[in-house]
Length: 200
Image (cartoon, rainbow, N blue to C red; front, side, top):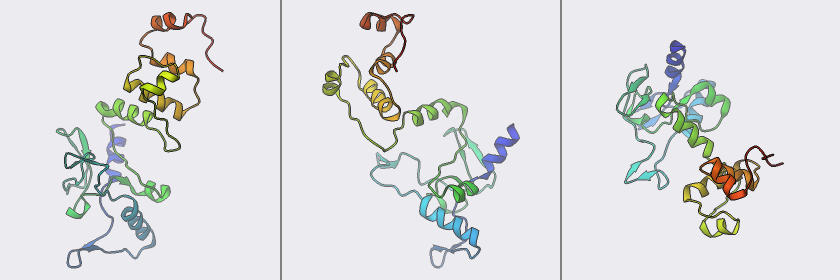
């Protein structure tokens, strides 16, 4: 098991898969067809460009540009609590981590990382709560009150919005999820959990 993790971690790379011409200050486009495709995908889909959406106090919230990592074997950084992958050149500092075979198959931006146990819960929660861009629902105190949701915090409103957008849901289910305990639910709706049939 540990050898499998090490093997997969070493297949995650963060560099442009070709030579760099320092005189021309550009990457050399490979002639081999598969290498050319991989190079094209990395240049088009795996280069992070910092802008307003990722800047926080003049620093990139994703950590770009990363420092060089000249060792081909990935290593764990105890200070950042993250894995650092092979990043041999200064020009590779903004490459988002990827797996070559997956990138060729997926043909879209990837961010492949080995997740440590301490970040596992955070990672799952973050992506479970992430809404897909197929619609928006901006609940605020005013429209929440019109929907019958009273004394709901801002975080609970975000949770409700996410739940409604990401799956079919009935108002009773949202109420149950936002309550702090079974007893409070019973007080508010006058129904005990033994009598509850759910919603169809």
